[in-house]
Length: 538
Ligand code: HEM
Image 1 (cartoon, protein in one colour):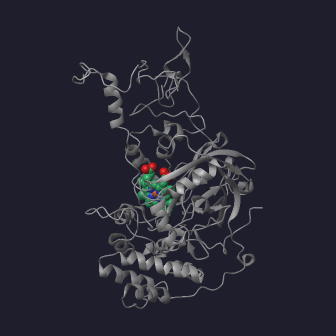
Image 2 (spheres, protein in one colour):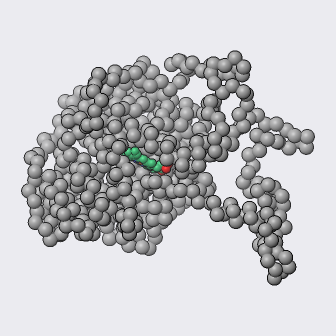
Image 3 (tube, rainbow, N blue to C red):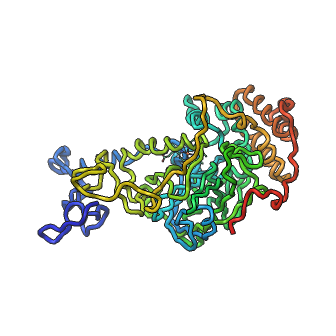
């Protein structure tokens, strides 16, 4: 807003008025006229017709009629909290991001969510969970828009509408509401086998967390950090909960679903209210920024891959503490708008084709969800850094811009220097060579292996975790109507592990097919000291 101006009565006028919510001693209309009755419509006599001239009646009902905004197209159901992030300073070797400096404290807002269910769906369904963090840093807002599963279903954002259409309720019957137990989901993930790894994580205990406070979080994509000297490092972000990682068992999840559909949001809010503040350490896996962007044979641009922590340990760089509940769900949890392109100096993106599509999608969807292009002015979305942009007007503009020349350079308004160099703290994209290439619609050959990493995950499971996975596949696939979908799902499982495939096949009453790929059992990981490629931060 513009500078405060004071009117003849000594009261602030124009841009300085910010007391828009329940500030006065009397009940008023939206225009500030005091009311003497809000329970009776204006009528021609106590038993007579209601009069159209009752402005209070019309204002009250009209506003109510427009209270709902569209829910998020995905991640509609969520719960959030405020908190503080404290940098350890350990990342300063690899990034110039000021908020990661030693003991720097940054306010944050974190929203957890399910992906598929609508706003009113249950919390304890089998699904991926969103873990989105807004860091209100002094250099601008940084959003880490991650999930509780370290890989994603697809490798290219162009398939995102397709996987979501497949995962959302069937368009004819609008069921199921929030579960992956249905034909289109399994049809998609068995025809697009890059989804195998994410699906396997979903069928594991990670798909039914005990609490938002007990989930890991992952940035999923590989990001590029740059330090003060301009040296770059590729990284993956991880959140590690201080309470450890815990899950429900399936029977618990189902019971809780019925008894308390708000189980996760209640748990988060109650814990914070009781002063049991949940905490996570932020950590990074570091990889050399080679032209290939491959580490130990793993393509770092493929978001269906993890890098095992035995190969690149997660090194802690800061501590997140959630210590305050939102005051108003709509104003904060519902209206918050995250974006993976909200970056600060020191943190840059890579050419992961899934990330590229996300950079377009979030702003686009928020323009329709939040009613126009000015949602950065909504309190929860306001940056804590000073803003001096040239964005003007638009639906729901609340800023009162001064001056006549919103362009730079101009010779009329003066204004700030607009050419920013490294020394001004500007966000500067890391210059990278773009290899000479043909224009193609194709994936690199290195994106073609869809089964080695799922097998690695399966082999890392304990016997009881394997039992849970088998039970989950059996339950979910048994809900499919189409026999051919179940049969194709078994073919995918055969390419992960014969035991997994046989057990699920028995549960479905179908024969177990043979694998169509060569199943390998990975060698034990080399000792870290032999790797010499991922480096310690201290
Ligand atoms: C929302 C994570 C891939 C489009 C979200 C949210 C999270 C998230 C956590 C909820 C944010 C909130 O709490 O408000 C991820 C992760 C992905 C991924 C980790 C892959 C690694 C994609 C892709 C697209 C996409 C590929 C589209 C091309 C959206 C949209 C929303 C959303 C449209 C709703 C945003 C809003 O209405 O504010 N995503 N997502 N996501 N995501 Fe993603």
